[in-house]
Image (cartoon, rainbow, N blue to C red; front, side, top):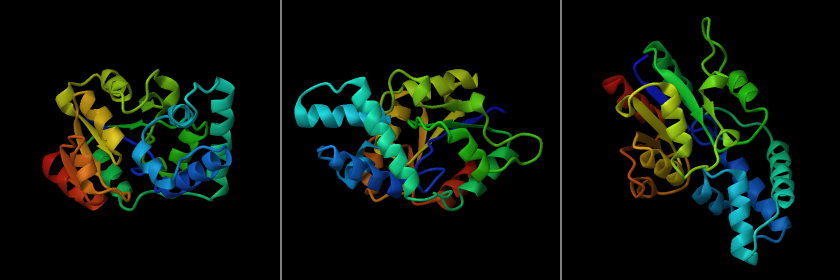
Length: 225
């Protein structure tokens, strides 16, 4: 396994961003915070705690308490699940199967702090052969970092744990802040524009390649990996 691929989760593995955007807008509005659905896409990649901290600081000019942050985050998480299930991004399963066939390391690097994350991954992407596609030891979540995206720490940790050189590691992202995190870690970033933002938003953060969908990414991988 001489290559590693670090997958973001929301918007890359799962078509979950519309539900996240709606849940964030509803809950933040209920708490008197100015946060629209489009702000979710702009802030995508940050930990939920960072999003709440910045929203309170911007509106009220004060630092929110830890209890306040977690109360809002837990409320947002409940609302997200109430909105119904999310499904894998179209054709991402083909990307994963190809990388498995090539014996690449497959990682998840996410700002999520959802306790059910691992179970959800293996339900959506069942075990193939003897080993699961995803393993706990190949996951970097909100609980594993002190600074979330856009700080490079999440992708630096994944790279360090991979045991590979930086030129052997690739970030797969859909969010501008996630691209910034990957580039800040000194890694090649393959961006897939699955959301409503213009492709230029990803290029502006120095993405090495921007694809319109997973088919475009797969075509690139089949030529280069």
